[in-house]
Every structure is written in C-alpha cells, then in structure tokens.
Image 1: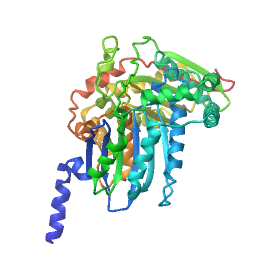
Image 2: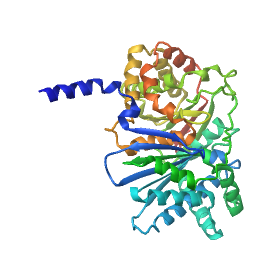
Image 3: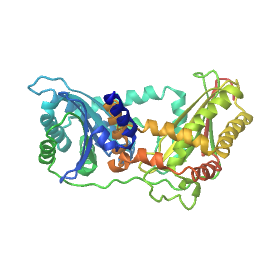
Image 4: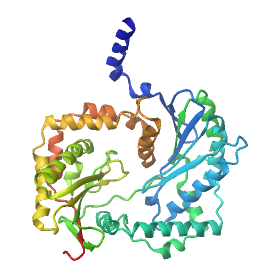
Length: 440
C-alpha cells in the first residue's frame, strides 16, 4: 500500500520536475565553438547522433543548388568512411538539406563514437570531391526536381513563394544551366564559408557515461575554430493587396485553394517590416496556439456545416531564422471556384479570429503544450531529437527550446486575443487556385 501511495505522490509532482532533469539532458558549449547536447536513454550500447549545421539554401546567394550538392556528397562520403570501421558495424545515414539548415543523422554503436567523430571532422574540414562525383550528384538533383515539378500543385506553390519572398529569392525558378555551371571549386568555397564550428551542434543520444571524454575528443578533432556569420535577408514590406494565381490542371477534379500569410518568428528580433506592417509584431506563441483551434474550427465550418470543402490542411512555421509563412489548403467540393467561395473561406477564418475566447484558447494551449513535451522519457528519443535538431539547425538556442514548454504553460491568454484579431485584420498576401481542366 505504501508503495502505491509513493507512486501516486511521484506522478502528482512529476509536472513540477524540470524538463532537463526528467529527460536527462545536458548541453555544453565547447572551447572550439561547437555545442553538444547529450540526451540520456536506457542502458544500451546503441547511440543516435545528429549533426545540426546552420547552413542551407539561404546561404547560396545564387540559389543554384550548392547547399544540396555539398550536403549530399558530404553525407555519402561520411557514410562510406564510417563503414570502414574494423568493428564491422554498418552505419546508415539520413540527411535533410533545408532552407536554413542541414541535418545529418546516423545510428551506431557507442564504442564507435570516437571513430565517428574523427570521420565527421575529416570530411567537414577537407571534403574531397571529384568531377565525376559532382556530375552524378547534379543528375540526381535535376531528376528529383523534375519529378517534383510534375505536380501542378508544386508549380503553383513555387509561384506563391516567389511572391512572398521576392527579395530573398525563395521559390526562384530552377535552371539546369545554373546547376551545371557549379564547379568543385565553387563547392569548396561554399564549404569554407559556411561549414564552420560556430554553426555546429551535435546531438548525441545514448547511455554516455564518459561525457567529458567525448567532449575532449570533439575539441581535439574540431580544432579549427574559425567562425562565420549567419546572414539571412529580411524580406521588406510588400504589396497591400492580395496577389492571386490561377492555373488549370488535369490532376485535380475539384478546385484546390491555398491561402498564405507571412508570419513572425520566435527569435523576437525587430524586423524591417515592423513599422510598415505592425500586425507582424503579433506574438508567434499566440498565433501558434490559435492555429490549433483554427484548423478544427475550419474543418467543422467548411467541411461539416457549409459543405463547400472536402478537406482543410495547414502548413506553417514560426521557427525560421527570419520569418515563415502560414499556408491554409482547402480542397473544394464545388466544381467551380468563385469569388463567393473565396469570400466564404476568408469570412470563416476571420470569424474564428474575432470570436475566439479564453476557454477555447485554454484548450488549444493544452494541445500545443502536449506536442512540445519532448523531454519526457515516455517520448521516443528519436522524436525528441527530430524536434530539437530542426530548430537548433536554424539557429535557435537550446536554453530557449528547453523552456518553450513552460512558456506555453505560463502564456497569458488575455493578451493573445488582441494579437490574433490584429493579425487577421490583414488580408492574405497570396491566394492560389488550381482549377480542374476546362474550368476557369
């Protein structure tokens, strides 16, 4: 009976235990500029490592494909060298090259971690690329892009991004000529400029007893502590009117509508648009809480009540270095798209914003807090790493991410509604429509 009672006390007070203690997380800033995050797991010989590098397509001024080329080749070289380990354990790597980050993950044995660190440093500082390897990788990227462009929906999204981020070049058309003009020397210059210690965070999950020893190995192998500045172009204020794109497609049977707003981010820096577009100073946390409610509300009104749509999906990010965007995608039930339908969709969005109350925000806040509870041992450590790496790769600080759950919990909802209403008084910046072939 006493044991049961003690268990009840433990679970009652578990919410008061800090996230760091509960998951078993330790963050270190090493003397060579590299950050390391250790995530505890059960007593296993296995480890999972992610190299988070704050370099991506935004660091390629020409947007010609340098970030993907060097990221893909780096991943292949690293995987090949790691598998030369005399222990004979096969290492399989996964990678993601994003707009603002490059992530490289692998699963292996704890005993091989020092060897893995040496492999990473050798290729990070001195990546040897042959002309033949570069040509093969260019072909892969071209084929991948051509497959992506086979979907008319993607063509329309590219145009929307070009309008949203005209100065930044996000959504810039892909030119094979630009890709093919990239040389080995160009990639070496890109690596020299962006692959530096101060842009690295290593996330290591596993039962690591000798953290000091691992930290020392990282410092010894990553001895070149040269720094580079992360530069991201801040998009200035745009047009006041909504830009519209329409195209017909044989790939859809009913119209497909996507509505865009640019969003503030969690970095909290003053942006170039603050004075010109004051609605963008709305709290990203207030908006993120609201979006959870808005998705449910739009599904209820547009799909179940008005029956003008078959589905509503959301895509948004507040974790960009500069700013992100909200995309609301609505698949219609109607055979034709009309301004009346557009008005109905926007009216439901604004209605949800204007009528939001604290009770609804409390429920949405609980959902967001649940999704951010990644430092719990009940959460798969791979999910914890994925959540962390995506944001750390962009440039967010671990201490901020550690406290993010508490920020949600302690957020004052009485001020959230004002920000939500202020934000959605502004009309969307882009509306794109994919019409069935034969319809206009």
